[in-house]
Image (cartoon, rainbow, N blue to C red; front, side, top):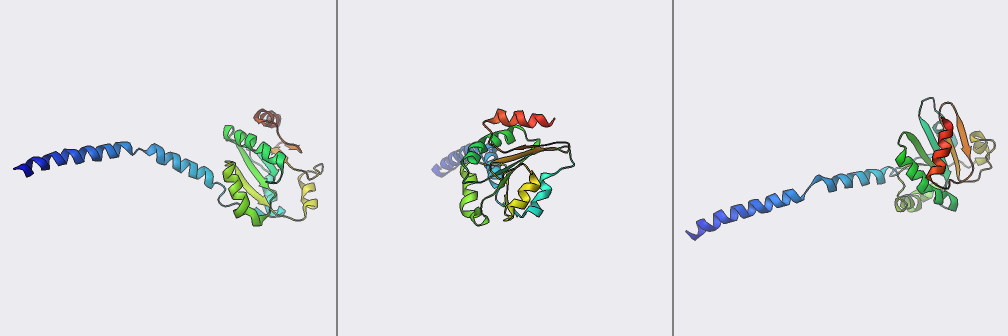
Length: 180
């Protein structure tokens, strides 16, 4: 008879435990995990281009606006402005932001990817590996000395070039508004 009394008591106890376990497992945490993994993984595969492969990225026939920033991990002004570019990209998802790394391809796995993760860089990164920089720099802008950071802002109607670092988010926004 005691067994019968204990058995019914166990069933509600298991039911309460199961319900509390189900209630404590909500999708919010897994959604956040998926979002952060998506953000982190945007640069899991960093394409390496020579200039001929890269050149189509700096022209458009669409109505889309682009911000293309040439930078390197070893360039202090470049690294300093990256958070402003990231803020801009987050605030203006309608603008395509591409960060063109001029670092060495051999450093992608050991240095570049860890750097991007550490700095929370979620904008698209490509690596330009073309030793004939004297030729391609002039093709991008004949007035460019080759110094970085260097940024191109463009749409199908207009191109703006900046051989300087941006001081803050407002600085970038003020410049991009000149396209319209």
